[in-house]
Image 1 (cartoon, rainbow, N blue to C red):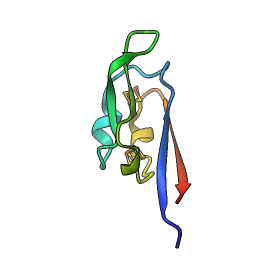
Image 2: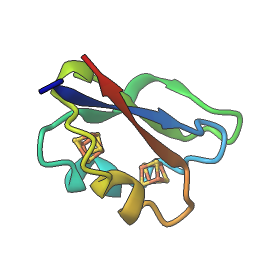
Image 3: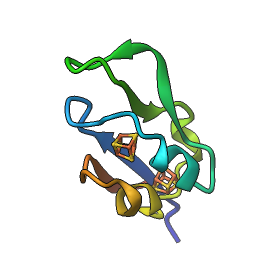
Length: 75
Ligand code: SF4
Ligand code: SF4
């Protein structure tokens, strides 16, 4: 059986850095970017540990602004 991993794409310009997705992730994949900000000045969410993502979509479900799209990747 093929292994499945997740890949998360964040709409960085829409992200308001609320941290909900970071807390919701069971595998500690996400983090608010420590240095980079978007045009509104928010530290946006990014995949700090991409290999951890299992594609569970918890992050996408909690994001109040629908900034996250989760893809399933076959390994
Ligand atoms: S899909 Fe699941 S494992 Fe992947 S970043 Fe989102 S909450 Fe974490
Ligand atoms: S939940 Fe959405 S708005 Fe909040 S930090 Fe994550 S991606 Fe950004």
